[in-house]
Image: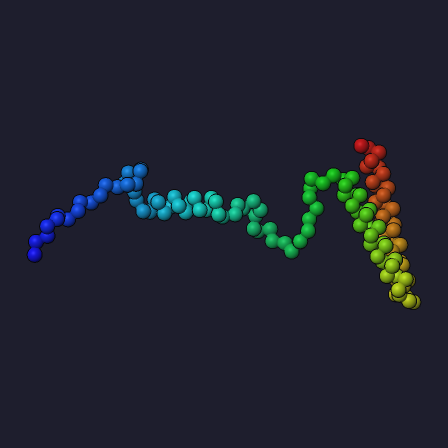
Length: 119
């Protein structure tokens, strides 16, 4: 049987930039996806650490000393409260540690006073 209509001609390319190569399209697509989806290597991966918390380098010395002083005061209050629930040598150990915390707080306060005087 004879076909009444001839085979349709190959349509012209609708790609706006002329003839395309699938390899080049794949490379361009990969570059675009990598640019938008891959995280940047801002920190080198060779620096593996188990450190969870850090102090930012941009924090002022006065702020660091003020936070140190408050942290030591909180630790002293918790340990003093615990010491009064203990008896015997355990109580003496807890009170000794509380005294060491208090001495550290005095040193932090003195350092904080000197930083405030310079400012």
